[in-house]
Image 1 (cartoon, one colour):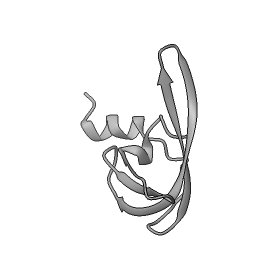
Image 2 (tube, rainbow, N blue to C red):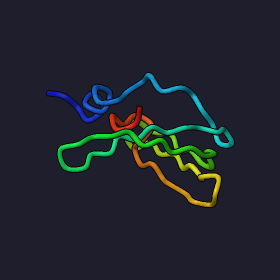
Image 3 (tube, one colour):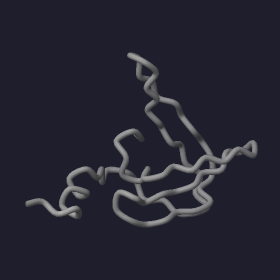
Image 4 (cartoon, rainbow, N blue to C red):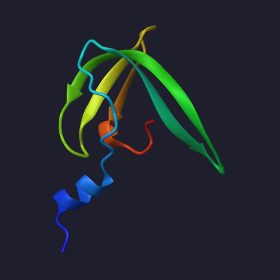
Length: 80
């Protein structure tokens, strides 16, 4: 029987680059609208990062004062 940790490891993507708070990043988010799927680029500065497995998060502040919080995004299949 598979444990939760084994299932989380199977779902994680490990090909994302290392980054820290203060780094400028471009996040490519897959958006699905009905039948169509597109990639939207979100560019900004990382203001916080919380480590974890599938529940790891990071917050990116867009240059023109908008903030976006990506929950579970470090290993998400929706981020390129």
